[in-house]
Image 1 (tube, rainbow, N blue to C red):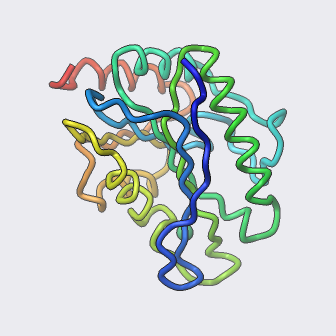
Image 2: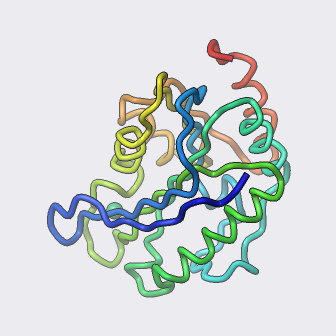
Amino acid sequence: MQLDRLYADILSPNGQNNRMHFEQYFELEADSKGLVIFDRDGTLIEDYKGLSRSDMVKWLPGRISSLAKLTSLGYTIGISTNQGAIEEGLISVDDLLAVHKDIVSEAQKAGIKIWAIIFCPHSKVKSGKMCNCRKPRPGMILELHQRFIVTNPRLVFFGDKESDMEAAQSSGLCIDSILVDTDNFSKRVDEWIGTDDNF
Ligand SMILES: [Zn+2]
């Protein structure tokens, strides 16, 4: 596998405070079994507000092997993450993109293909209002769904917060939304694979 593409895109500027960023790292495979979307902080890696360098990234237990399994079974992997630290001025978009590129590269060494990462840079604290992309709103999932052009466009969401579940459920697009904690992640992923009718 090769890291064949990286770009950051600013989407649908319906007014200044309604943009999100989409990064794509691999070509979509038309025969994908489905898009498995993960929250980032607290779900895949340790939650660290203001994470701005790759040496601050700590993968939580079992994540690498579960994501490698999903990749090898033919699922597509995406990440959807609230990054209000950008609007709050704690980190820059460039820092975040560099961290994401390193996360994708490191995962790739373990046999994981992270197709895309989408993030909302808005802070409710800073702006005092809620954008359409920040979870619990479903904007990022709607955008991933639009870009997930495959034969069988199924979506599932794993996250560690109620706001993740709410975003997945209110999108109306996810066949499952699964709440995980630090310790049960691999178990939940395995259970889901076991019940997925497409598998
Ligand atoms: Zn947003």
